[in-house]
Amino acid sequence: MPFQIILTEGLVTKSRALLLHAEIVELFMSIHGISNNPFMLPNVIGEVVFIDHGQTFSGKEVCDIAVIELKVPSFTFGTQDLKNQFIERATESVLAAAEGKLTKQQVWINAVYTVDGFWGIAGKAYTNAELGHAIQSSAHA
Image 1 (spheres, rainbow, N blue to C red):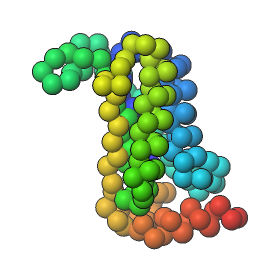
Image 2 (image 1 turned 90 degrees about the horizontal axis):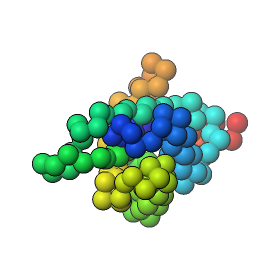
Image 3 (image 1 turned 45 degrees about the horizontal axis):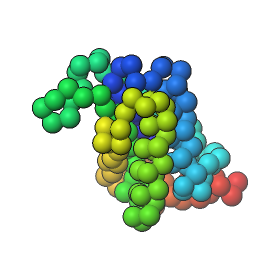
Image 4 (image 1 turned 30 degrees about the horizontal axis):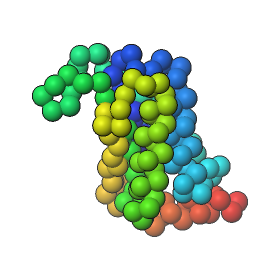
């Protein structure tokens, strides 16, 4: 599941960005109860992208920003409570990493849901049911 963290350059160091990515992955895995799932863990991939200062915006104004975007199957955040937990805790992680250089209003988080049957891992197109089964099966292996 690709995670992308987009940050205005200068908000965090590159080494702190690595820690932030790891925190976001652990948060995602832990709220779903699959922190050490051998199928999922290597398939939560991601990147941190730094955008030049002065090239990120809110509305029509230059603004430092942090964006976390997840690409996940539609069943991933099955309740509003899971969505709330993830957004609140991920926002807190970003704010801690930025050490006072951002406000909550400068942090955006969203999930893009993949089309059922179009989740590709290792050359196989998984349906939601197959993906759920693979995750559950590896938890019991």
